[in-house]
Length: 89
Image (cartoon, rainbow, N blue to C red; front, top):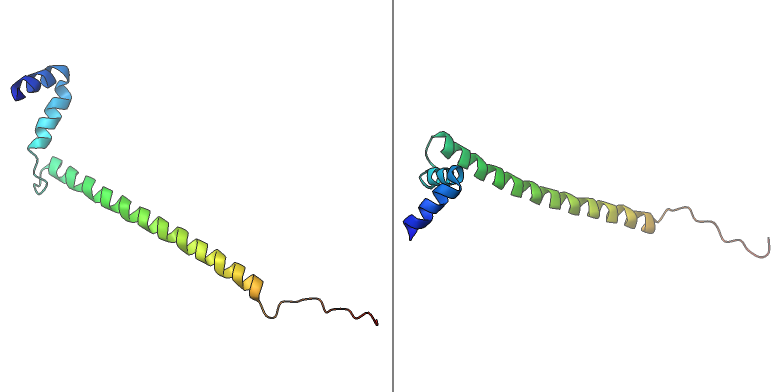
């Protein structure tokens, strides 16, 4: 059964089948070009995940920054407020 599907895949999609056979034999610790390419792919995925974390943290910092300055504007004790006018004036 395995040989049947192997021959079918080889006839239907020869380039993809050859690439899959090549990748099945690749050792990620190998210094060959394919091994290095796989190592780089893993590193890129890790870096993308870290970048997404940094973006999320940056978004939270911006939200906190906005919250703090909004609160400062609301609660400023020395804010200029008009003096109440007395009816006697």
